[in-house]
Image 1 (cartoon, rainbow, N blue to C red):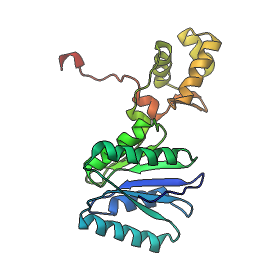
Image 2 (cartoon, one colour):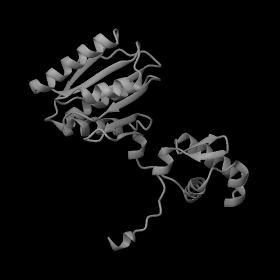
Image 3 (tube, rainbow, N blue to C red):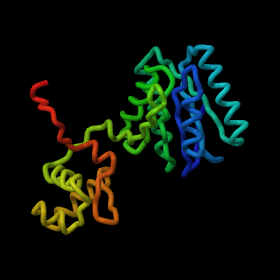
Image 4 (cartoon, helix red, strand yellow):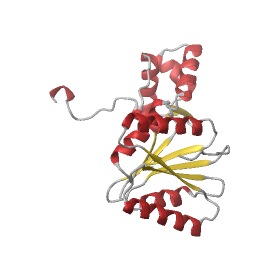
Length: 227
């Protein structure tokens, strides 16, 4: 595993790569990668020749299309799950010390490496790292913050605020009056929810982020107690 030298304020795309480079390429071009950004490919130590061919093809296409973009291959002992996670965890900590945007492209590659990569970033609390994954037929591209997979401890007032904002954006005054909260209490709760990335300020008041939408109960026409 070679050392990773990173500058601040860059985008780092990290891919799990299988036998086909197309998923990685689509993410790269969707993101508008530019000189100064970096691509990291995570592959097993004992690699399949077909995956190596895909890696070489990825290198060639990027070199021809966007000269000056470095691609680094990191090999991990995927057969040893704890050791692989430990190695990836060190890489995650190194990357998180920078101010760059980190994207994990998880559409290709071995499932076990995908899980090892997720485990590494989850273990260091990398909430703002973005996940991108395509459906098998490429009809859906899902992007979401890793924080969506992490538990968030919320008190009852914070949950009430989220549910109220979920109905429609609310101003500070509306939140205080509708939930019967003091201004100081409401300010503290809103500040924490913003820091957690669950809400954001918008033109019409506070509104939920996608992460916030994932952290509240949604009404379904199903009685879950019957399942």
